[in-house]
Amino acid sequence: MPPPTASYVICTTPRSGSTLLCKLLEATNIAGRPGSHFHTPSFERWLAVYDLDEADFGSRRAALDAVVNAAIARGKGGASIFGLRMQRGSFAFFMEQLALVASGQMADVARIEAVFGPTFFIHLTRPDRLGQAISLVRAEQSGLWHRRADGTELERAAPPKEPQYDAAAIAHQIEKLTALDDAWERWFDQQGLQPPRISYDALSDDPQRVLADVLSALQLDPEKAKHVATPTAKLADAQSREWRERFEAERH
Image (cartoon, rainbow, N blue to C red; front, side, top):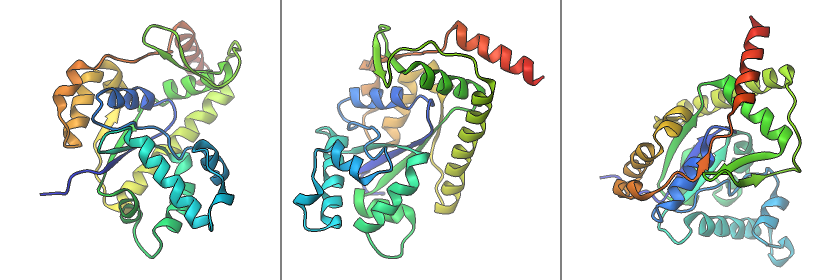
């Protein structure tokens, strides 16, 4: 029998539905508090996120240990399991830092498990790459990244600004997002992993069913999913459809 799962990593790319999945898991109160606990590829930023000062530690390694411990505490949120959302763009720096925490020659998964315990990997992806790219361009331009289920703003990164159609930006994001997802696939193959694949469409169409499946995979009670309300609202609207139709018409 495999050991109990101590942590899980949602391997993903921007605008894939990861905020929805993280909020659903957190709302169960048994699946930790998954989030991008190591998001920015900057050790100084990691220290700031956890209100730590490197000068308080005798070495970079000691400071890094403190960051990891703080992240684990936050990612557990009082539960027994640690949840982590990992964007592919942050992954290389993350692994470089883990090599300082768990040194020696070992595969990536072995290093992750040396730090976080037995770990379960999930691949959250959005096969509709055009829709994903449009969503990302709109979020970057408008500053609005997420809304709550009631329509109020959940996450804004910049002051409100009306987004403008930009075919070159959309095409660039399609290429970039495809490369990021392909990089995850290569890494899974290299590490001998066969993670469950969750699609954006399946998650948005039936979030409670997907949540129950994830809880079961994590050896947690899937019945908890029945009592969790969908916490976020889709941002796609008439403008998203207009941009899609225009982009497809121009490409044809």
